[in-house]
Image (cartoon, rainbow, N blue to C red; front, side, top):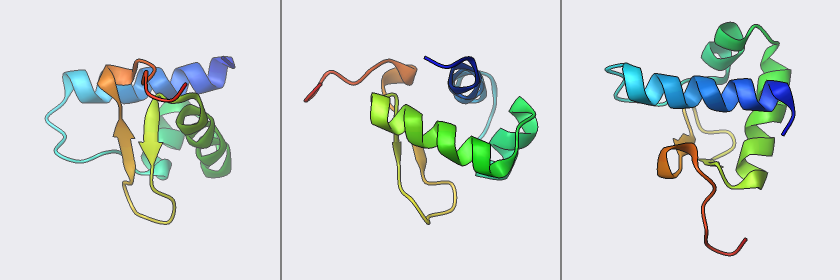
Length: 77
């Protein structure tokens, strides 16, 4: 896994485990936290979805769902 993709995943795990956040982060929040551009954050969120760590609903604000605490989903992989 690319180091930036790992940083995005770590941020999503940290946010889920350590905060009273009732909703997923936006791409802008991810970008700010990981110190990358919004388009780079979008790319790495897409990679995490392809790898099975998250479910991402494109064009929906906060459309990110961390699966099984960020572990690979063991369905059709």
